[in-house]
Image (cartoon, rainbow, N blue to C red; front, side, top):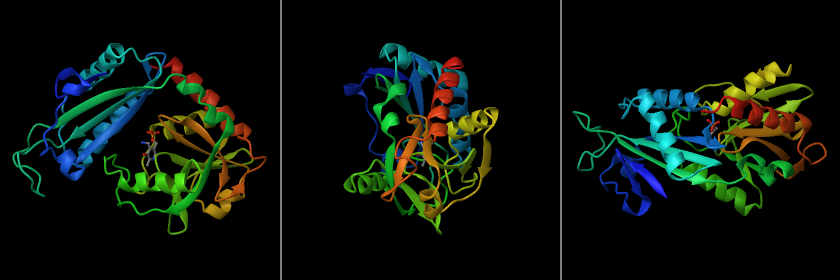
Length: 284
Ligand code: PMP
């Protein structure tokens, strides 16, 4: 695999990052994951805009221009012959040459790392036909989940709790209400109404969330942005999650309670189709 490291395209074995890079020492880094379908980037503009916001929130400089960023994504997709898969991008505060809690002053050059992952058949994952089972766990992450940092230890522990429980993922609960999934936004459906937590510092502002809510409204579904409890979710007609890599993924079981028929609900299934179809049309 060819990866991108600070201006160079190199075989992954040759990629090098300093042990003093603050991304490595302190998770002082932000990232994005953009899906690739038919060799094209899904919602690149959205991911680029969110990256800009994450960088601003952490007072980090953009390592390259927006046009250069698109060019690097495309070049990696091409060099690695990716038809369906992902591009992972990470920007770190860089390498100050030593370890110190304070940001380097003056700032050092940010680190920029990208790699691809090939996932043939990404759009027709068998999991979408079966739907996910999930458990709920406490949300023990920090308070700025709207910034997409590489501080992913708690979500990773959450995924392991889900695995141990024999299910696919976990929904995080804070003060009695669901925030989001370990790596996705969470929704319930009642009748023709889709309910999902409102945007705030408590959750990541999903790029897929924005697109799916827009498409839901276009499909004459009602959208209600408010918090919900696990009890309400267990009682809902349907549930689903969204993310750049899972698209729209139906949820069929919550903490052991089966939703509806135990099969993906019609609204989640339909939104998945619409999202994939519409996104392919405008992919770059
Ligand atoms: N919430 C969290 C905590 C996530 O990690 C992700 C995916 N990175 C999402 C939501 C979904 O965001 P997006 O649709 O932009 O992938």
